[in-house]
Length: 471
Ligand SMILES: Cc1cc2nc3c(=O)[nH]c(=O)nc-3n(C[C@H](O)[C@H](O)[C@H](O)COP(=O)(O)OP(=O)(O)OC[C@H]3O[C@@H](n4cnc5c(N)ncnc54)[C@H](O)[C@@H]3O)c2cc1C
View 1 (cartoon, rainbow, N blue to C red):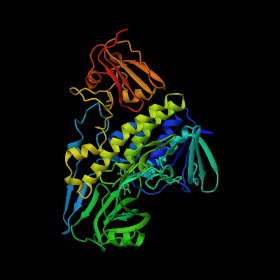
View 2: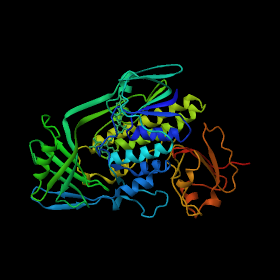
View 3: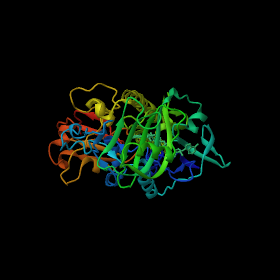
View 4: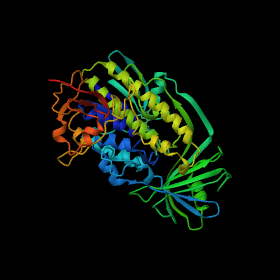
């Protein structure tokens, strides 16, 4: 019997599996597809997600395969263009050492999944494709799934990361509250296109039908390190479905020099804004789109799913290794409000032009302000539940890189003797913060004085910050 079965090998399931496997948990990943998904879907990876994935050791690889700060080129109906770059004014202090990534990375979702699968394979786990879960049941000792080919598999715990139409959620009988709007639809595809420069994200928008019946908005985004573009066409006509012929007709209608060489994949999307009211039923936990869906506006779905997985991974690993299962209750408590916020934000952004969003909205999508704090902050110093900032270290490394050496990192300032009490499992490193720091950034970022002890959780949030601890 496995410790954990993860249902779904999208970004959420893969991240959860890595987080478990690298902590010595026996994990099996099932996916109903015959092989990896090919669509580019979630191509915007937000700065906080880059930080979270950095702890898994995959961010450098993703950055090498993606590109930052692609400006928008807005094409008007009269053929004129206007360039808008939202990146420079939103990156914050350019050399802020507490935040290594401040703008989102464009990288196609299939590539992100490929990089995550490779990382998972390093832990000795391969995805089992062609394994569609048809039903599941649970008792005090574990969970049993039945696959649609009749196979039965059992595990102590199960993560349902099987997307918006989750079978796991349905089998649990958990409601998916919200609404569906058939009038808000996207025709999607990945295509090779000639006649457009690849240094911009090109957009056409109009209040009246633009090109082809019902097409009101076209967005063409070059996908780095591929010859492909992501095609998004806003449509209000439910009779139109994404086919290579229709996408070609609409795109080639945008201008005389624009030519579609090949359409790789297509899909239809319609608006669903829904979420569960609990992420856990007994030994089964929901994560990612299985727990919350919303529009792609703001590029947050995959990012939220990965953050779910990182929040859940270390907690479930600790419970598998003997921690009190009550630790898992904090998963819903911390992640459900984040999903509710993301649903509201993506609703606000839906229909707004990329370039007309407020700085506050764009900043909000980046995930850096997410907090699990339960008490109000005093001043600017981080408190328990806040994101743990980065800082340069004397050896040329950074705190983020150093944190990879253990689950928990304890920073002891000014000769404090740190005794990290009652941590719920996992490896712990205690660092003499002043001896390690390259400059004053570390003290300042954590609001530390002599005697301060900061405990950083495995997922990069503060567990505690005490003003002074004596020997
Ligand atoms: C056009 C578009 C653009 C987007 N852009 C962004 C963006 O820029 N940034 C962003 O963060 N998000 C974006 N998203 C959203 C993002 O794609 C999703 O939020 C993301 O795919 C969710 O990941 P997941 O792993 O939770 O679920 P999924 O990616 O849906 O993966 C679920 C997996 O479960 C498998 N599965 C399903 N049922 C079963 C079963 N019964 N048994 C076994 N396996 C099963 C499926 O085959 C699938 O592989 C976009 C989406 C769209 C459509």
